[in-house]
Length: 87
Ligand SMILES: [Zn+2]
Image 1 (spheres, rainbow, N blue to C red):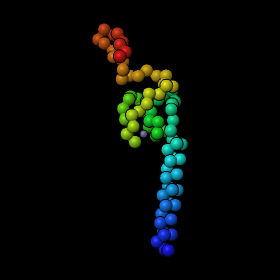
Image 2: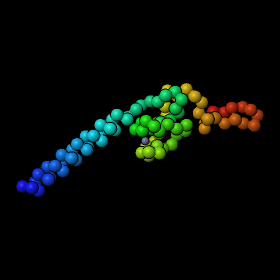
Image 3: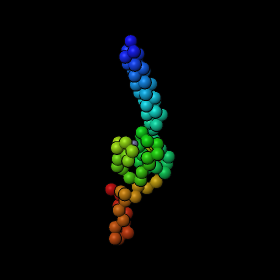
Image 4: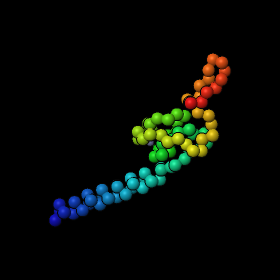
């Protein structure tokens, strides 16, 4: 009798924990960022980078921000003649 109620308590704790963490994930999902952000992590709102790569928090590939209005410095090459080439 005592062990069965312990199992029920354990299951209830797992259920509450999984619902809570699932809700947490959904709150932080985003598909765009501010115009000054070139790349961002869709899961971590605090991760904003100037170049592509992986999120330092969760390891996901960073997404290119559709709202970004700046120039991507990493893809612009200035030659010795002063011409600017965009890759
Ligand atoms: Zn992340």
